[in-house]
Length: 303
Image 1 (cartoon, helix red, strand yellow):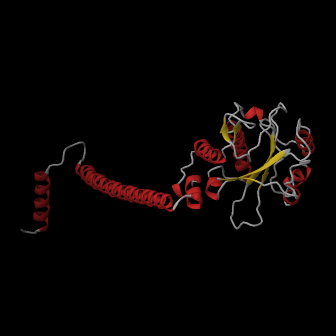
Image 2 (tube, helix red, strand yellow):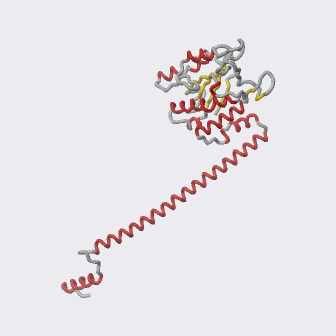
Image 3 (cartoon, helix red, strand yellow):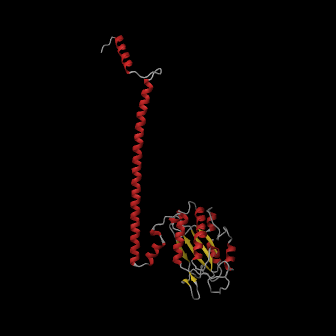
């Protein structure tokens, strides 16, 4: 799961003024998809779907109490699952989109709120999301991701909330609380795995990526060894499972052949019984031999 906070700029991510530019951008692929008859998604928040863009802009732009002209009024966040994560979220684009909205509502926004260390919950966060299904610079087959506009102020328009602050759970000073982005990434990843029953490999975890990028040489080596050891154990386990399956299949075939032979033998006995029985009497070998001798005598055949 890749999560990033778009840095403020002079383009669509200029967050010192209206969010109109960003909202317009978030709708940019809809028209093309609708013309092709492809599935599209409207804006959504914690409780509602298919929200009009005009409401999004008005709601975010009016929630700016006590902010001065150059203050950030909102933040843009991208939530982008990997291809393997997307495969775990459903089969169709609509299923994946519904799963993504569920993830944003039940995991990401609650973790985002808690991470400010101000006693906030998901209901305190004013946000709007929009699903994108394509990414022009990617060669992946699956590219669905989510854009979020999150207000700088809480729902009550009282508390300032910045996910870009460098403060982390501070108790004193101008800024109390703070925001730990690394903790958010880890909690959001664990929440995804729990929500979708996703079996995450070490090599695709945030811990692994972060250590390979920012960790010391010794930390990188240690984590690589863990990855290698885990992979070896998994390979051994899978090999053992395969051998057990082969053994079970062979045993099953033996049992089947044994049962088949028994059935054939039983069938032979039944066939013999059918031809041996006549007029309800048991088969008598002596009587049969006597009849054969009498027939030969009549024909003048001697033994």
